[in-house]
Length: 278
Image (cartoon, rainbow, N blue to C red; front, top):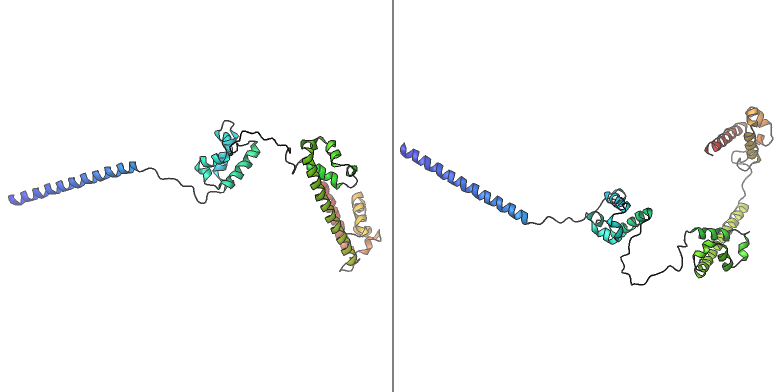
């Protein structure tokens, strides 16, 4: 028995020694793992392949808020610099991003510096502001479309001197715009005349029947339509019942009584709703 007790105690010491060595090895591995983890640089964040649509993105809201701030550093940056400044901007295609940013800047009245290096020479816009879509272009089109206007007899030089708005451009640029506008308006007039002539020829070739498929005249161009409009407007419709009104005029009697009654209700509703919406 003493011999077995000694053997048991020696086994326990071996077990404890083995366990302690295992624990020490585990602690050493754990310390080495954390030291190695500290040395590993943080993972690089790549832009997502499919970012959120710009319309609903937080990037649009953040960019708009920063551009509204007069002290924001983004105002002094070019569009390309803004695009590459943060990941939430660079994940979008540059061309689409540039279009969206310029649209926001236009609403806020902001202009961004250009990416191109200046050559030291100052460029002046000799041609004046943009002609396309300007009030002067619309005015000139209105003048050229008016066949009764006396300005058709005047030269482009005389028209140029008549309005101060035209003098924002040099005469050479205005004259070029005037000639192109003249050609465009002339082409529109010729196209309208051609379509009107074709319509009249079609009307002559295929005249409309006086009677419809149901055996009574068509209401739209019939004199009864205008007479009923006047009777509803004057209040004559309310002074008699529909049968008396139908019998009071020969033009009304060309339509069946039930059909004419439907036109009465239709005309009343049309005039009532017209007054309401006006």
